[in-house]
Image (spheres, rainbow, N blue to C red):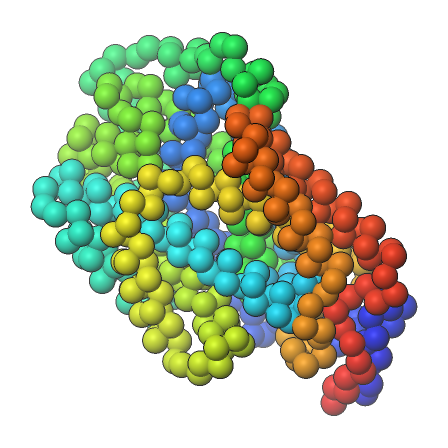
Length: 457
């Protein structure tokens, strides 16, 4: 049968039948997929960022910003989940339509580098926890963390960890509950964690602290990309379940709400804990000894399997498409691990907030374009693995302009706008990207990157 994919809105409706081809037999069952994605909840980064926002903007502002963040993430990811499952589309496949096939490779490389960056961060926390407990050279613990993490993302071991996550999750949450009780018993209770304020900050930040907190969490809109890649593995019959449970509001209540609470509480309750990337992990080990080390090790090892996996998977796509390198998956995992180790040796963790801000504008622009595209094409299925790269333009003008121009403006605001620029940079980027993409779509004759007829037997 033949489908005419010239890029017009009427023609792409014909791809509905193509997107529905095949059954769900090769897709993941909802339980294992939920457990695989919920491993991300145990990222110590989510604990840290809640504490950092409370320390910077005040506890009340931080909790308001986190609540708004949960609502925003839930709404966007419910939309992306439905679309990814219906179309079997990943970030790499979807980006071909909104950016063109070469533009998609840029997005894929950025996704890979961000996943690698998070692997560096989470791995550094584990290494620092081991160093706090046992001493030794930092580089040695970095190497040990990378060596034991690498096999965990290969084949059957990774599938085993997805099952093991059902046991690791209680250890993670139980560990933090015990830590909170331990801190009160050992150091006594005080209400500073609930009453901490930062007066006269609103003017410097260009708005209230809750807005600055909200903008800070926009720096991790990379979770939208994580959602699309994971959701593409789901069964269509489980769509509503995944929208609500796996990738929707329940996940972010735990990831940002509960983790943020523990981060704020422990930071203010444990004397001497620094509001830094490694401060909370060190505080847990110093207070709880080997049990604290076990909590950090188990939780960070599990989350890092997702970072290594997504980093290697997207690096492989970039290498095959752009560099024409056809290598086994295990080789890409090893390459990714080497990159992670070398980056660990750099003082990269010290620049976490700056990196968050830069990646924030890159990713928020992409997410804004993706959401706008999906809303403009409701009921029309276009992105799926059945369409080859040869059917796409090199660059999609509307998508590339809507991505690059707002990104440049957002970075300029962050770099030269001071506190106000940091607050408004990601917000302006997202709004401008959505408006630009919608406007360019309406003013160009060809509004998608699809270019010619394809035949599917």
